[in-house]
Image (cartoon, rainbow, N blue to C red; front, side, top):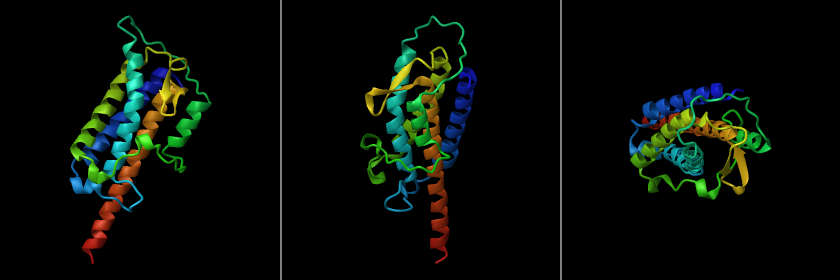
Length: 196
């Protein structure tokens, strides 16, 4: 994979995520956003809040790297992306195609939907995904293989910048798909309930 092509691809995928959030979730009522298919499963709101909690951490670290660049860069340099075992493992754990269920660490587990403000959660989600999209424009001036950011597991375990971007977008897509499944189940539940 090449850095510049990957950055463009990730921006396209983030644009699709933002479109889905705006067209599929922004028009739902607070009750619909809080609806859970089962007590042990997340609502749409909880999926989005989980993304806000997890991704704010990584985006803040990436923003710090980008802010250190200054204004000296003229042309972005391309490079072949390399992954190490940390990046591969984290990407595998969040890949939307993989059925592996990894429990969310406590610090990024959302509070119950009843305790969340839907407008705030949605606004934060849109803002964070938009920021990540814009950071990709500036981050192409960084070395995605050498520059690393801290993971949720602490400063002792860092992830390469390229792997971090890939993981963040895959993680977002995974939980957007989860939220879409909740929305589909909610529609089925409403039809079943109305037919009784």
